[in-house]
Image (cartoon, rainbow, N blue to C red; front, side):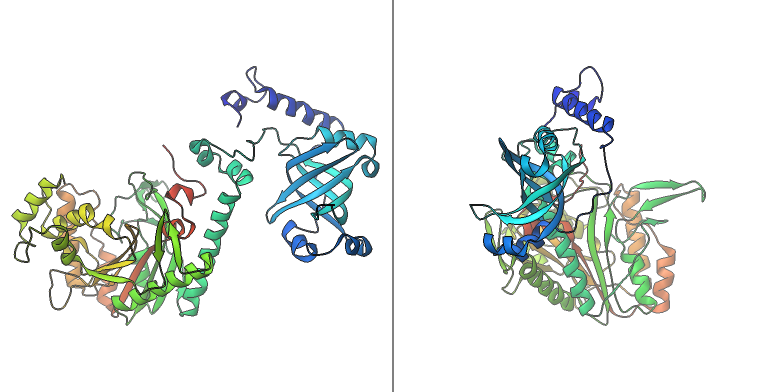
Length: 500
């Protein structure tokens, strides 16, 4: 990679390689050949390989197929009167065969001075080399863009992880693996849309800027709208707007888009991330557990070609039925000193939290303490696909209470390889219960919990019009991409992650 001095174009400290490339650009300007826009490509590398890769040299010579290709030159081998170069386009790479006889002395001499990273346009006929590689025997060759900055050595790639993330465009040029990750991400998102469309869900778009942050327990980003003279919040989740649509008659609805949470950075967290949220009327949370299990299984088949995958050295079987684990039972398993009688005792739980080094706010009740203990001791142990069910109402302010035990809710979270992948529940559609939950969240906020929800009067008005029995689901797309591409960090599956 270039060093810091190369970031001063034209300055005294400019990198010598960049200065030399800039000199070549000036020669192109003087000749009227800088940045032309009249070359027209009529073929791409992958299509040529698919259509003609199996042809013999004799067949190609007989058919005399002419093509115009274009791409970035990533390799060049000069051998006196003839040379080979590799051009990379979005589909792959194609070799070009360049000779002095075909181009002429002056043009061939110019080509020999062109640099790796330059973008070229080449026209000629298809041929096979003696080693059997499909190539274009060039009779017209032009430099379309002069690259002023050199690329890292392709066989070494970018060793500096920070540079890979900050200069993703370079990473994409030189790393086949990086390109594959993001092509798979695009394939996954297309598959999810097809899957949900086939299940009669309707895709919608809801606001990114909210007058009241809601839909998740998270700290929002704030912004200010000058014309309206009011503070707005980047959405932490689309949930409350999507459920308004269910009230309005959209009985199966989903949104696949960005959400924003004002939280720290980690291998699993980025302040902006992609989330799928969907809602289905006249369904229970068990229905969505079945739906998300099927979705992940089919996604693995689509993206990986199999349902048993490898993630960071672990074998993950998405083809088998996902395990189910009761939330409170998981705590009893993790802390053998607890028994059922102690499980909701605030004093016992507070003492256990202190022993585990968990700092608690003054407003924390038994449900919150249970949740903190779960995150500390249980979450990382859930390696195979596991639904954890029946969470406390205290940490589930939008979920329906369980009929048999109102302390709990009909909620699930899906964990794979120790990470939360999805969160879903039977939606709370009792407006009076919802108002009480909002008031509890306000009390928590007044007690110092910056992630607690606000009181949303308009959402309550929507519930008072009648929300059908409904189940909802949120699925983290970035973490799913991590799983299906064997990527260790969320930064590896975001084109432009936030960095310190």
